[in-house]
Amino acid sequence: MANSMRLPSPSATLQEEEVLISSSDDVQIAGKISNKFSPVAVVISHPYGPLGGSMMNNVVWAMTQHLSRFGFTTLRFNFRGVAPSTGRTSWTGVGEKEDMRAVCEYALTRLESPPQKLLIIGYSYGSVVGSALGGEMPQVHAYAAIAYPFSVACALTLFRQRSYFTLAAKGEKPKLFIMGSRDQFTGMGTFMRKVKLLPSPTEVVAMEGVDHFFFGKEKALCEIVQVWLEKVTGTHDLKAFLTSAAAAAAAAPGPGPGPAAVAIGGEGSSDGGKRGNSQKEKLPEACVDGNQEL
Image (cartoon, rainbow, N blue to C red; front, side, top):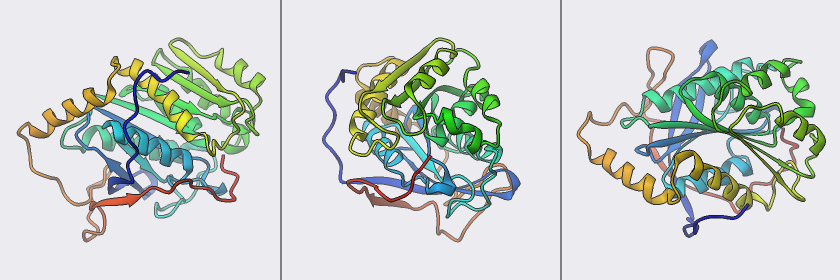
């Protein structure tokens, strides 16, 4: 897919603020947020935790950095059971969907300048959870699923895969489904049969010669998502649109900064200032490990 605009120069650092968010079952979800004044927020979810998935995954990292450059609010996080988040993997995906709901509610309700639009981008297992929540949660404007593991979703959700995809196919929100032609877990035939069941508007992209992990293909993947975001936001100059709106929001009068750490879904929390601090975090060239993340 052709890129319709020139990308900004790469940045060596990504400035984020650590947050701690209360989910169901007294679970605390660790997340990182950037660009808190943007009119568009994007929640990004990671592959299967028990197989090594986390918000440090190469696709999650690349997507966070790319969207942050344009001025999107980005919020990445670790599902329950993936440290430093607490709790245990639910095995059914039910708890993880509640984790993501809590993160989305945080983006919608706890920022000084709440976003006008909320989007979800899920990768691998994160796409199963993210697309289901995207179809279910009215406040989500659009959602993207990268490398949705159709052929193994039954094992990742204890045979509840049909209910997740039914939610993903619910309604008429903008949707983007991306799959590599050499994906190790879902063949292109299965992928195409499944996405044909999705209602419009749905965009489908097959990346030729790309496998499930996207190592070395992160930039091309991000550019595909960027073009889709231009359509979703109705602009061909994302950076100008987002930065001007963010500047206006930051200049508007309003309440002062909130607490250093906040928890939603409960009474609120504080951790002695260990969280809620702004950080500049180096992004590695590639986040490659030996795990087979799903």
